[in-house]
Amino acid sequence: MSAVAGQGRRDRALWVQGTCTVLVATGAAYVSYRHGREFALRHGADASTASMWPLIVDGLLTTATVELWKPADDSRSPGRWAAWLAFFFGISLSLCANIGTAPEPSVFAITVAACPPLALLLAVELLNRALKRHRADDPSGTTEPAGKVVETGATDTERAETDDESRVAVSENAVQQVEPTAEQRMWQHYQRERTRGRTPTGAELDRIAGTNNYGRRVLRQWRATGHGPPSTPEPSS
Image (cartoon, rainbow, N blue to C red; front, side, top):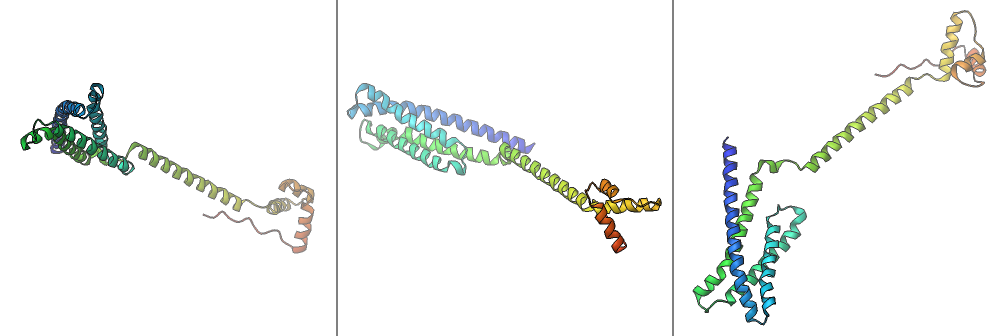
């Protein structure tokens, strides 16, 4: 229960911090737009260009901010450097526009003018750090991605199939090892027929073993040696 309550407090704190960041960004965008438009008019831009110039700066800041809020990984490291570069470039432009339109070159006037972009910079950085802590504390963040789970399952399946194929190959090899040869099958039939009081012919032995003109040669060999082929090996355990 304590872990769930702690997670709920962290979620509420993150929601409050995100809301405050949105408010700061909205206020900074409004002030920066007014100052940026005035800054562009003072330095040679026409009315339409001056109206678009602050939107370009704010759009750059928004794009960079969204990129910075995404989860960081090794594959996006170059993209995060580009996002930080774009963010600081946009803040610098906004800062120049705000300070450049200060009513008088005093410390307080410059402070008021520089406050919106600096406040946005700090708010975005604080929220970015809060998001990193939230992802690090999230228990579900420690689990494997779905793609890896599927990949691991596929690997286990392939490993099981490989084991089955290996067992089948071993079984087939064992069957091949214990299967009697043609001469051994002939000898078994020969012994059975001899116990019945008859001697099989070579053609009969060929039919038993599925050979052709091999039975007569085997019979001559057995008569010459006085015994048949080696016995059929027993299956190995």
